Structures are given as C-alpha cells and as structure tokens.
Amino acid sequence: MQLSPDDPEGLTSRVFARLDGRLDHERGEPVAVALSGGGDSMALLHLAAAWARARGRRLLALTVDHNLNAMSADWTRFAGEAARAVGAEWRGLSWDAARAGPGLTARARAARHGLIAEAARAAGARVVLLAHTLDDVAEADWMRARGSTLGRVREWSPSPVWPQGRGLMLLRPLLDERREGLRDYLRARGQGWVEDPANGDERFGRSRARTALA
Image 1 (tube, one colour):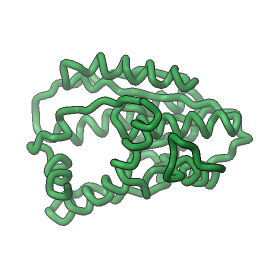
Image 2 (cartoon, rainbow, N blue to C red):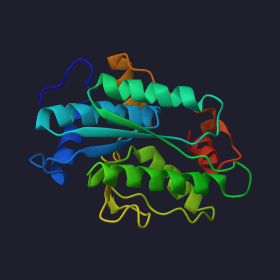
Image 3 (cartoon, rainbow, N blue to C red):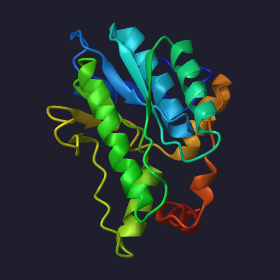
Image 4 (cartoon, rainbow, N blue to C red):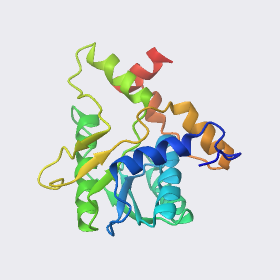
C-alpha cells in the first residue's frame, strides 16, 4: 500500500497488516469497533472503515454513553455521525448506574465491556476492535508499579465479561502506535474528536499516570 498525503507515516499499512493477520476478510459477519469519540477510537474508526471497505467487510461501531458528563449525549451523537460518515453501522448504548460510590472507573469499564459485548454478539460479530495504544500500555505499567491490579493489555484476548462476551475476541490493532501519531492522522484528515475532561482529572489513576508520563 502506497503512503498517502493524509497518512505520511504509513499508519494505515501497519494497521491493515495487523487486521489482516487476525481477521478473515472472507467472512460475512460484521466486525465491531468500540467508539467513544475520543482521538484514539476515532482514528481506529477511520482505519477500520478503510480496511472494511477494502476487504468487503461490514463494520459496526458501538458507543456507550456512561451518563457521567453533561455533554455525554452530545458526544454520543458526534460518534454516531462520524461512524455513519465513514460508512459504518452504528449503535448507541447507555449505562444508567448511579455515579456515587467507590470504584466508579472500574464499574464503568465493566459496564462498558458488558454492553459492547452484548451488542456485538447480537449483531453476529465475533471480534471487537479496541483503540488501546502504546501510551495505554505505559500508563498501565506505571499504575501497576504503584499497586494497581489493572491487567496487562494484550493485542488479542477473549472478552473479560461473562456471559455477554462468550465466544467474543478483543483485538487491539493500535497497541504499537503512539497517541499523538493518531491525532496527527486525524488532523491530516480534518477529523475532530472528543476531549473528555475526566482524562485530566487526577482523582483517577489513569489521569495521574498520563501526567507523570507526559
């Protein structure tokens, strides 16, 4: 694949190779992608949509509104519009649990995994693409070194939720890519993304890790 003006670093070629290495483009079921609207998942949406068009596969984008921010409904609509603009099917999902109580981040993550797994399986998908990056790996390592029980991020792994995720695999094709490179890719394409202020809230371990590693 030749490099293009909106992909000067060959990101598309690398991601296509990772997708081709794990996915059979002859299959008829859709490939699902988790889409928050943030920079990482927005880049993955565009890359996965290009791959799906080239390989004749259906792409299903799934967005979970956690209802934890006054702007979350707008972010969800933005994600849906972006998904449809690149030719993907889209489903909006919602988590309505109470905000109060300990372990909010972990509870939200578990709910997100469950909702996405359930929707993916209902659509016939067997693989969900997630937009974890090399930065996420470094942040998780930093957190574990300080006592976190957060698991290691792997490129290819079974869904962690049961029974919703039974038979469902998770693929992280951006795991060797840096976050800033993905944003450069989006800027070159004129595509915006959501910036969740919670990412800078140092009450959360992930935000503290980002600050420490910046």
